[in-house]
Image 1 (tube, helix red, strand yellow):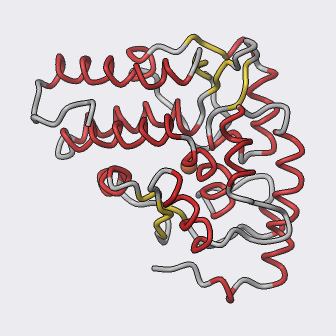
Image 2 (image 1 turned 135 degrees about the vertical axis):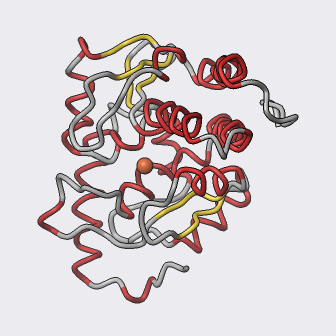
Length: 248
Ligand SMILES: [Fe+2]
């Protein structure tokens, strides 16, 4: 599947512009620096729906990632297989004017504006690929795949992170692309918890409401190191099922 750019209507461009303008204004002092830098590097802007071809050229040079078009949500096992090949799944359809605030399923604005800027960062790029590598070791074990999906949820989708100055910033793509939650998650400090892999794996989540817990990373280094803990927990609970190493 490909992004059929010439099929976007003037209304699609208008929706992209409305979403981009309001969201970048909202998160420019709330999102982590890696996100903001990525938006700039990829030259995302309000005037033009992001072109996957153009973005892929830049990503290929930077970290080797590619946007991979999917029709909608795909099974977690397929998602992790693609992720391990540095293919990030994205939809090409855009919400309409009546859905600016809330969507049941991720659209292109969430997938592209929310996720793709992070792929320009070498640490996050490495984390994602290594996380997918761990998932692949246990790909036939639904329970482990669900645990890794939970870990992904509380980091890549709904994580928070401290800046070098100690301020709590938005890390997750689910937050950074959401007008309501990008405000809510920082205001609700009682919902913030220190980042802890074992606790995250046992924390259920819901997709249809704002989160009731946000785990706050101290740094990107902590995120990268967490994979060692994750691998250790899975080995202990489910045995070491592959010779693949967490470092690959
Ligand atoms: Fe997402």
